[in-house]
Length: 264
Image (tube, rainbow, N blue to C red):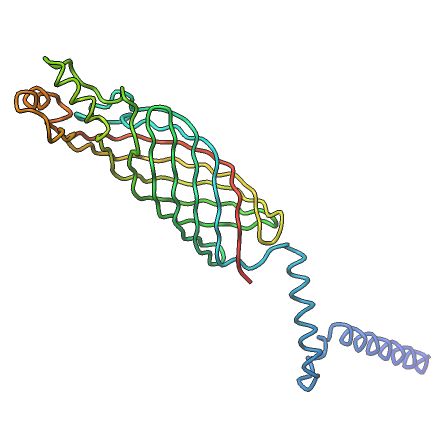
């Protein structure tokens, strides 16, 4: 009986040792890469890894980007504050066109953008610097950023400047002549939100939305140099000709865009 117990215990111990050895063999790490392997095999392995990564995301490593915007905007130059601005038509909507370019470092984006707002009552140019984060999600980029820079009016419609009726026809004619010299300029700052879908590794289509605060100033309107002295006195009585004006407003815009993305 004792011999049977001894033989059974031995058989059980041998079985456990065998299972333990098998388990250790299964859990053992793969053998290290042979440092003496031919360079061709190493290069081929790296190429396969790069191809697999690109197939997974469909994207290149982006360094430079350029995109163009076509959309619409609404601008109210005097929404929050106005002092002697004397602009009759201070809010309008219409088409908007933009062009931007910059650098990208992984998720950090830095660039510049020019926008032209061709509105019904006036036109406005904006030249901004942009800083933002572009978060890649497979074929998509989600952009969140801020911008700031210069804003100025390109042209005003003939009825945009507020004036009172002067005493003479000569003064009226001089005022009408000087309306083309009205200048409004200042600063803007705001937020950006955008979405880009990569239809190819270097090309994207998307949409962008922006909101701006506008801080604008109108210098006194210049009086034509050939104005007679008696007429000049009537013109100088107009608020827009003797005082500068300031205002705080806002702008909203949205656009579709095409992008070109260059990198490695």
